[in-house]
Length: 166
Image (cartoon, rainbow, N blue to C red; front, side, top):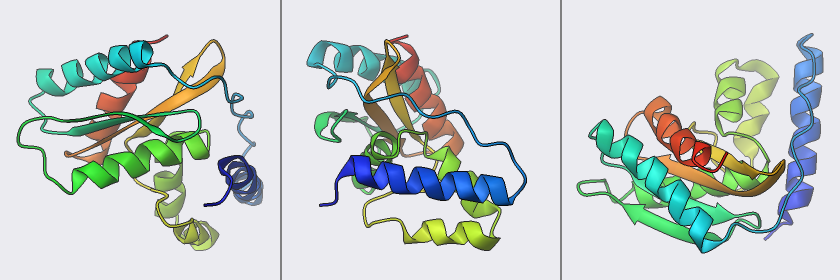
């Protein structure tokens, strides 16, 4: 498996070049990686995401990975589709590997043109909204991925989980 830091660097350059070629200002650099999220913090983030999903009656799968992209927690709410297990994992892994929400990729691909090259991301990378990095103390300690409803609703659920640690 390719080094997530190397992949993040390469994708960062691609995203920066795409933004520059479109006349847009380059985004600020993403935060550095920090120590991996621990189980207690992951439980807090999971509880925040689960509360958002339950409040909206959304049957989702929630996955939390550490700063190395390793699975820490997975929770499948009642009636969540089985296919969402792997999709949520991929969203979380992508968010931590590339140090940005997966919505960035979804938005770039929707613009078409040269951005379609992002469809060639390595297998397992997800260009679907619903994965967000978990940042604590200015460093990425993990990521949360959600799947099961619309991409926007998945992202809302994931962000609620990540926000519990701010």
